[in-house]
Length: 186
Figure 1 (spheres, rainbow, N blue to C red):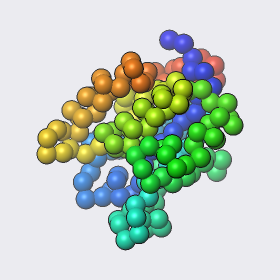
Figure 2 (figure 1 turned 120 degrees about the vertical axis):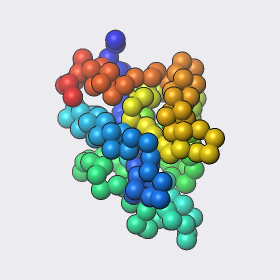
Figure 3 (figure 1 turned 30 degrees about the vertical axis):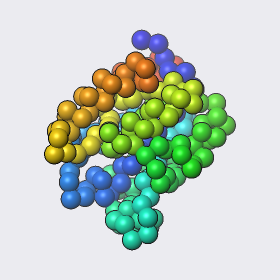
Figure 4 (figure 1 turned 45 degrees about the vertical axis):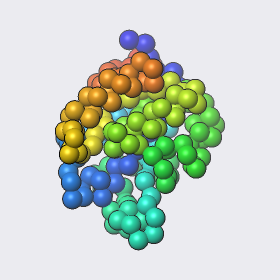
């Protein structure tokens, strides 16, 4: 397996209202543990770590400043990490993400977070369209069950659908190994 070229880690919507809201995400604790392990490895290697919050309209449960809008307290956020807000499923739409990545010389975007079928899917596709090599961490994104599909079915479907044309699918262990080839192991 080759190393990852000029990577950055993107953590999407690990917020109180999604992680601890009325519906628990599938394997939430395990997903968060994988994200924290990856972010620690990225920080140790002086790679950019970015965390984005979804911001709803005023009066919504995830309106800016509301308790549910906050990043989950279990998510480890470093002092040098960039935290920013978005209002759409794409972490690129209406944000400075593309510019920050270009400033840092990022070529590979490692994507983790929530929700698989919305913000993860949309951001993976947008990043690929913008020319980034995209790594979707197969065991570091999650969602909740829907009336049509269970969360594990949604995750498996998106891992299969996105792999190839939009992303390189890797587990958190594989990402740690790849980062360790040029940096330090997690």
